[in-house]
Image 1 (cartoon, rainbow, N blue to C red):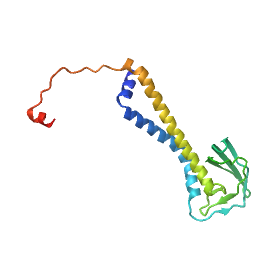
Image 2 (image 1 turned 180 degrees about the vertical axis):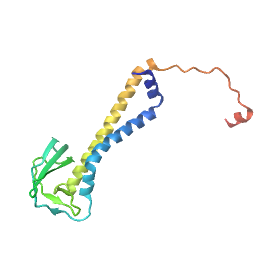
Image 3 (image 1 turned 45 degrees about the horizontal axis):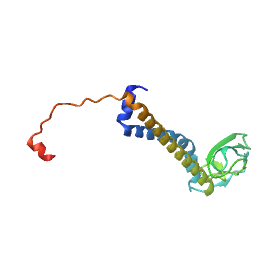
Image 4 (image 1 turned 90 degrees about the horizontal axis):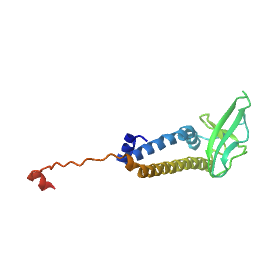
Length: 179
């Protein structure tokens, strides 16, 4: 490791912690950008959901551990124009593998599944994002711990010696009274 970099890491641990937290927040923005708008729209109470009879759903295909953390994909085909659409979900605490849900449409034209707009479906999707956040915080802590252990082991080799000034600074009487 570079001597200047190690000096910067040991000199300012607060900056290292802030940088790690900023990296975690930037990393967590990816799933929130991808899955958040659909979650927000599905959880809104604007209008009603209506059954979309012209949509033919296929069984959901999920990967991951059932009841722990899964990424589920559902494909459905519009019977009128034969267009195939896909919706992706992150879920936890449930098993949506091979489930064939109904396709519903909101007042604004948004299309989603019937099990995703229920309270249990929304809780499962929010829980998956919270699991990702918790996992990210654990990885951040582990990375910082490993960095500090490495600095403790290898740090004294690279640290620069600080020269102590031998000059005597005299203070006036006014400044001595303040101390």
